[in-house]
Length: 284
Picture (tube, one colour):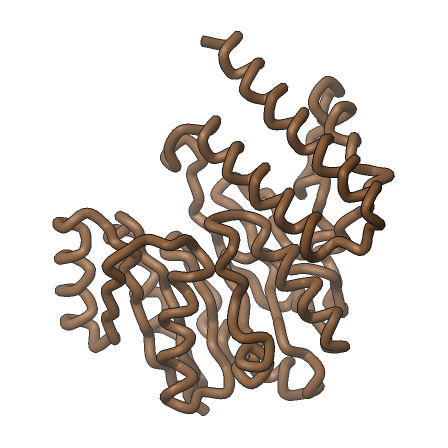
């Protein structure tokens, strides 16, 4: 079987080289690596284009950065035109030490046609587990951030929003940095929702899967490394504002809350963002 692998590059040529290097070592499955450049700097785009030519990858350049989902959709539509049944979404900063990683995910998806999304154990450079994610709550729990903000966080090997990562199981969400998706399902939902620029993609996809009576599976026997460094990703206040905007969009369009519940949840998010900005200014 041959699958498509979509890597969305945005000024991350060094990460792309490492990621492609790991993917080239995968065994038991054929792949076409598709690198979509999401309107990077000219120098970085040229490096990635040359890398793709060198490694035999497909290179697609976007003339405008319309966000994470929109950028990935460009590569996914290409994969659909080529007739692929499965595609892996992988951030450029992903590493795959397990050489049967792709084959393991595909094998699991082939056991159940209703599995349309499959993710693996993901660990960060700090060893913290990042997948699978728990179910999104409703408006009643929307002010839980107050406790998290002022409470002392316990040391753990997983984030507090992470579900059981030790056992394989059907789950609510997997990390958006790396997962396998079934292409016929993706076409049925008309690809990823492009109304969010960044963040909350996992929550939206989770609801789309649920609304279509399909399943998401978490595979504990496969593991990848997310070499993500937070302090290298730009202004944290700007990123948090973007997250808050995306979260409000999710609440409006995908939550199961009634109208009043949605208003309460959105108010909570706006207060959360405002509090974050306030504390960020105090630190300066």
